[in-house]
Length: 140
Picture (cartoon, rainbow, N blue to C red):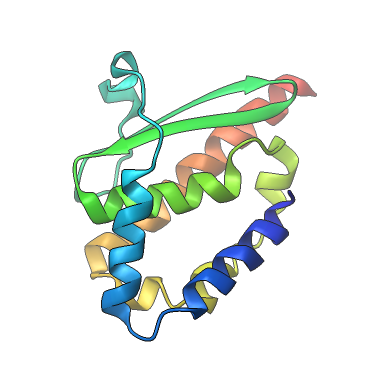
C-alpha cells in the first residue's frame, strides 16, 4: 500500500467514531497491537528527543524499504507511534521524505493532544524523516 492509501484508510477509520473519547480509546487499542520492540533497542540513542514520555524508535533497511519498531512508556503515545509506523513502515526513504502527512489534520489529532504531546508527535515525525534521509543518502 502507498502512504497516501494508508492515510485514507486511517481517515476512514477515525470517521466512524462520534467523539474524541472513542478516538482516544481506539488510539490506545492501536498501541496495544504495536509489535514489541526488541529490548536491546530500548537504549538512549533510540529515544526521541522532544517527547514528554519515553519513546524508543529503531529502524532497519531491507530491500530498500525502512522497517521501524517502536515503544513508549505511555499508552496514548504508544498508540500515536503505532499510527505513524502504520503509515511509514515498509516504505522507501524517498516516499517517506516526500510525504505530506495530511491525515493528522483530517482526523483532528494534533488539536486534540496536549501541547507537550503535540510537540512529541512532531518530534516523532521528524525522527522518522531523519532516518529516511540517512537511508536515502546511503542508497544513493
